[in-house]
Length: 138
Image (tube, rainbow, N blue to C red; front, side):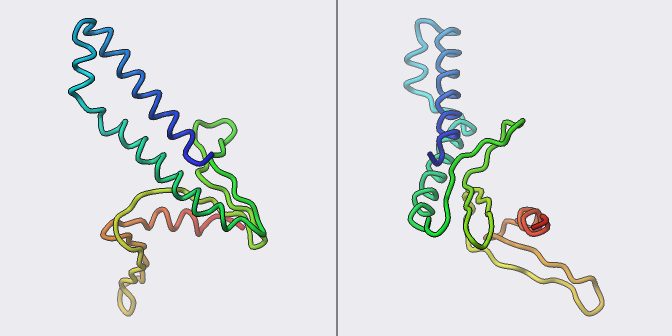
């Protein structure tokens, strides 16, 4: 299932925080949990899970003539592949991220300075993501 490992991590963090607060404050733990929010790092896992689930639903109808695999672990690592698309044109790894803005390429330099290309999503420089994906051997 798309987003299942991110969802499990979110649930694990919520349960661990609840246990920690209830142990530290046996009488007021429930009240503290009721009036306080989860930390941003915990909320980010829930947001990531929702994004992966949405992207998974969008990729699934495009399945034929290939196959879409979701949330695949990498052997010997704690990391995972969000989506793996296998089709006649190749194998594609799709990593779900939430960036604000439209992606666009910016070319700088040229005549007297070295030419450089950047990939921007909104104002965020995502060149490293682009270069890592495009420089891998086929």
